[in-house]
Length: 80
Image (tube, rainbow, N blue to C red; front, side):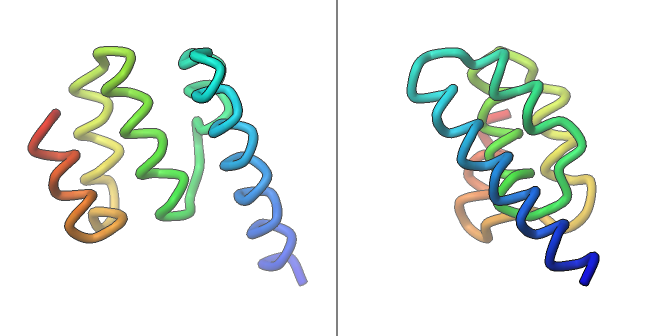
């Protein structure tokens, strides 16, 4: 049951981060997504890092495990 709870936490983090990004509060989205494990959240964290000009961190997040979000993740990596 712990896995289901982790998935719910990751989903809530993603929704909150997307709300912050929509409001232009990139730093808040960055803080929410720190330590995320899901591919979607890691991709969103890397995207947020790029918005904050944290290129090295964006690259680290994308390469930490497998590159998240397939081709979109590789595109983001090329942008870092």
